[in-house]
Amino acid sequence: MTKKIQLTPSVASANPLFLAEELKAFNKDIILHMDIEDGTQGKNITFGMKTTLSAAKLVDNSMDFHLLVRDPSIYYEEIAKLNTRYVFIPLEAITNPMVDLDQIRMLGMKPALSLTIDTPIDHLKVYVDEIEAVLLLTYGSPRGGVNGLGFRRVSYERIRECRQLLRDDQEIYVDGGVGIEELKESVQCGADGAILGRVLFPEAENGLNPGRILMPSERTKTPGEILKEIEEELG
Image 1 (cartoon, one colour):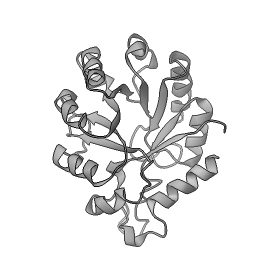
Image 2 (image 1 turned 60 degrees about the vertical axis):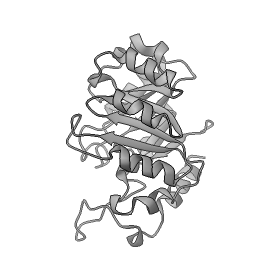
Image 3 (image 1 turned 90 degrees about the horizontal axis):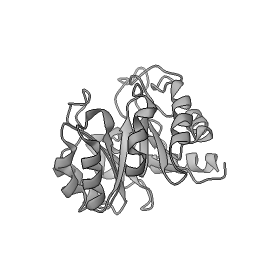
Image 4 (image 1 turned 135 degrees about the horizontal axis):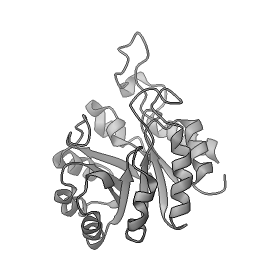
C-alpha cells in the first residue's frame, strides 16, 4: 500500500472507567475520534461537553468529532475552541446540511458528512463542493456481519461509489466493525482511513462477562501498541 492510511482510535470504544489512561496510550500525533451521542440517533449515549472538554485538555492530540445528536449546531462553537480537525454531521438527521457545513467552516474547522449504511451514496452529490471528508458507517448492527463485529460486505461497493463521486483531495473514512482484513479491503476500494474501536479496545471473551470492555490491567498490549502494530502491517 503506497498511501498513508489515517487510523483514528474511537474514544467511545475505550473503557470509560479509565478514560484518561486510555487516551494517554496514544502518541501525540495520533488523531482521536470523538463520538458525541445523545441517544436520538441510536440507543447509545456517550459524552457531554464537560467530559469532552476535560478529555481535550488532558491530551495534545487533534480530534475529529462525529455529532450524532438532535442538534449538532449547539456544539460547534465549543469544539471550535479545541484542537479540532473534521466535524462529521449525519446527513440523515440535519434539516439543512449546507447551513451547518457553512457554520463549521466559518469557525475554522473542516466540514464533513456521515452516512448510515442504508443511505444511498448519490445523496452526497449536492454536497460534494461543501465538504472535505465523508464518514461511511459500515455496520448494520453491533454484531454479526463478515467478522462478527458488524461489518457489512456491501460497504466495499459503497466505498468505491463514493470514491468515484469525490475529488482526490476529499477523504473517505469507514467506521463500524472494522477489523484488519476489512480495513485492508476498504483501502483497496478507495478509503483513506478508518475509525478503530474494538480492535484497539477489546472486550472480555466468554467466561469473563462477554461484552465488558477490558480494563487496562487485563490487556497484554496497550491500545497504542496495537495501533502501531496495525500501522506496521499496513506498511
